Each structure stands twice: as C-alpha cells, then as structure tokens.
Amino acid sequence: MKSLPDTILRCPVPRPMAKIRLICVPHAGAGASIYQKWSSLLPETIEVLALQLPGREERLAESPFIHWQPMQESIYGALKRLPPGPVALFGHSLGALIALDAARHLSLNGKRLKHLFVSGRHWPGETLEDKVDSSQLSDDGLLNLFTARYGAQGPAMENPEVREMVLPVLRADFSLLMSCPDMRASPLPCPITVFSGSRDPGTANMNLHLWQTETEAEFSHHVIPGGHLFHMEQPEEVLQHIRITLENS
Image (cartoon, rainbow, N blue to C red; front, side, top):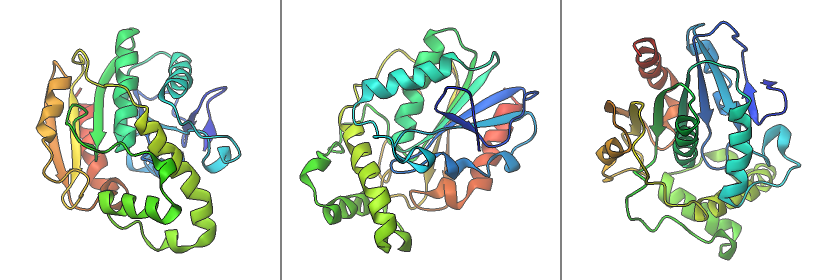
C-alpha cells in the first residue's frame, strides 16, 4: 500500500487519471489495510485512499491519538496536500465521525466535496451514553464493552499476541471518542449516504434518518445484511452503492 508523500493517507492502487478520490476512514482499532481490496472492486475512475492513524500496522511504534484536536491537525494537513480534483469520503463507526469532521473541513476550504458516506454510526446529535473512560476498564472489561455494543469480534481476539497489539489502539480510540467535540454544525452542501447493518447492535433502534439534517442536498439510507462490520463482510454490496452514486454525481 503506497503512502502519499508526507501524509497519513495510504493509496492501495494509485490511479492518477481517476475522476474522483474516495478517502476511507477505518473503525476503532482498525488500520488502512481493511480497505486494501476496495480498489479492485471499484472502476478505474475512482482512486481509493485510506487513512492510517498512528499506532496501527506500519505505524505500530507510534503513539495513537487520544485527543481529537491533534488528530484533526494531522488529517487537515494531509487533506491540504491532496492533488486537485473532487473528493468523496467514507467512514465507518468512529471513522464516520472523523469523515464528517474532514468533510466539513474540506467544504469550508473550497475543496470539491462530492459525497459523504457514513457507515455503522448513529447520528452525532443522538443523546447516548457512548463515551466511556477506557482508562477505568481492564482489558477484559474493554473487550466486553466493545462486544456488547458492536457484537462478537471473532476468534482472532482470543490470540494473546493479537490482543496485545489491538487493545492499546482500541483503548486509545475510546479516549479519542471521549474527546470528540459536538459534531452538529451547518449542513454540508454535498449529499450524504448512510449505511447500516441489518444485525448491528450499534445502530439498532437509532434514528439514522436524522443524518439528513447534516446536508442541504440529497440523503439516502441503505441497510446491508450483516453485523457491525458489514462493510467488511459485504464489501461488494456497499461498493456497488458507492460506485453507482459516484458515477451519477
């Protein structure tokens, strides 16, 4: 996965002649590699970029962000160095909030923002007790909380080496969420599409239609079969919607 010079963005398959760049933001605890195969599932007209925050994958030795503002500054710097051309954003769960923040920044700074795709996340104005001080939780307590909110995390987390690598990042991402400011602001000029999983406990009974208050343009909502990580379980269905949406924009 190629890194763009001096940025936190990774590009699985460079497509300099693409008509639009799709910037993808991972969920809590995950790295850019979860979007490694998305380029092969999208046409040559779309170049996929993935956000790689510190503390994961090839940035494992770096301290992860635990406060929102330093993360913002790092992302804004990377966005500033993007080549000219239209941009769309996709973010899942915690990544949906980061993508919304980035979309507002791009819009305010005159970038051609074509679309915001938010996935697996309730509307940021929903009053929920979802901010938890992870420093007060044991490793097992943190995993139990994550499983209760988002469903089983699979057998990989039973591996001590995987747990040792993932838990510090997961704990940091909960701290990052704790520091997230109020995300409600002026509506975006671009359309918003919401994706949710049919069996995702993280968005069950949530008023996902309220995401439409974050845009002055079109709004749509698609339910995808699967749990919280439906975008990894059913990437073809998610990307079909993204492809059609961007081709028609």
